[in-house]
Figure 1: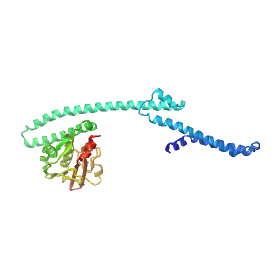
Figure 2: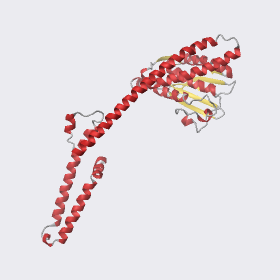
Figure 3: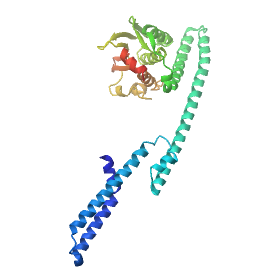
Figure 4: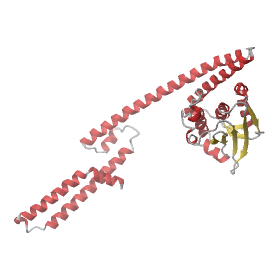
Length: 340
């Protein structure tokens, strides 16, 4: 129906010209007495039927060509196929121009993909190069005897390490399907490792952790899960007041899926910010008050989680803190995930 209406609109000039001819003929039949013996209705019906049949024929031919053309838009047509379309001279001019534009844009797109891949490879190489001196600096910081100075250096090193780590995972995000490996992971080992990594920051702010048993094991990618937990923990520490506590515990939801909760008693997230906290570069109300906020941590965590089948939920009240929840997929959901 849509194609029929489009065809009629495209041929509106034909219809208008036909109506003009019909009106002109009827006027001639009315004014010329020599034509009084000819049935005007017979002429009108004959012309109308002929015109309708002509339009129907053109509709079948042109819609067939259109469907054939649309079915081959993904590739340049060979000469044999072009000739089978039976294009008119004007249509062939349009066709060749459209084809040239598509070819040019495909070339530009392929070139952009190559440049993006080269940039990504260079960025990954740079990040790996930076990690080496970072490791050396960390070893040197451990030998600083002045405790206050060492604590400050450890804290600044951690900030730099988290930024480099964030950039590394952001670069790898586009190819995460090639870089994930689902296996059974013990939540306890992942959480405790990330807490130990934040130790210098936690000591500086006096942040403590209350961690339940975390005896559950989940089927997921350990490296990417650690990255997600790292981003949520860093946010919890960043926005928690000094000498407060972060609580980490697990439970099962009504479908028996494992839920990992990370709860802080920080400044909380305003209601108007909640729908946007996982958007790229969105720092929110609290982020505008802190020069350390990049708006990338939760965005990356959310996108990584979505690609490995984990769902992230958040509940928050201003002044009372936030509760981030990771829901791990069930067995049948893992089958769908690995079968993509």
